Every structure is written in structure tokens, then in C-alpha cells.
Image (cartoon, rainbow, N blue to C red; front, top):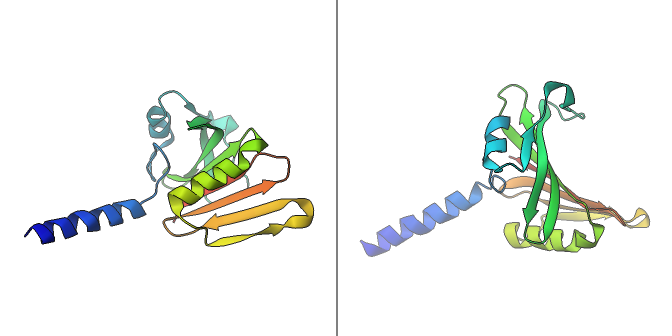
Length: 152
């Protein structure tokens, strides 16, 4: 019986770990729920400041900052225009000197990337994780890295 209970605990931990979400948010939250979960670090954007930037069926409707250890990130939250539910988070570093730290942090959280590439001649580096969510890290030499983290 103990073995069976232990097996369920391990299985639950593995299954719940696959639902990545992002930091204090859960996929499907509304802009208001994201802002409330941020404890004042994120604000809901007024309708005239919301941006769709070519992301099909997504609209940035909340933005702010997030501190993750030594990383200070500008964050923008994109919501499905049909359901008003959180689908993607874009976060960017202000300090290019922290690019390697952010990439190391992502690797520790999500394991080895599934894809790496870029254009070395212009200093572009791209790294992707696709197991639990779709996570794309990109940086150009001398600029802070940008990450697009979307639910699958």
C-alpha cells in the first residue's frame, strides 16, 4: 500500500510539473487576475494602450515588472481575444550583462533547450524549450534578452 501511495505522489508531482504556467500566474487568468496576483507590480492596460503586434488572436492587456532573484524583467501579458485568458508572457531584461544569467535560469527550470541557433554575424542567439510550454529566448549582442513564453 505504501508503494502504491508513493507512486501516486510521484506521478502527481510529474504531472503537475508539466503544467508550467509562469511565475505567479496561471494560463487562462484574466488581466485583472494577473494584476492582482502580481501584488502591485503589474497593471491592467487601458483599452487604448493594448497592443496586438501581429500575434494572431492575442492582445497585450497587462504590463509591469518582475524581479526573479537578481534579474529585473519588464513583463507584458498577452491574452486570447476570444476568451480573455492569459496565453503568453513576454519578458525582457533591461541589462544585457544579465543575458547569460537569464539563459542559465531558464535551463535550470526547463532543462536543456530543444533548439539553439541564431545568426552569429549579427550577434543573434536563439534558444527554445518546447516540452511543457513554448519558450523562446532571443538576444542580440549588446541588448537585453527577450523571452516569449506561451502555453501549449
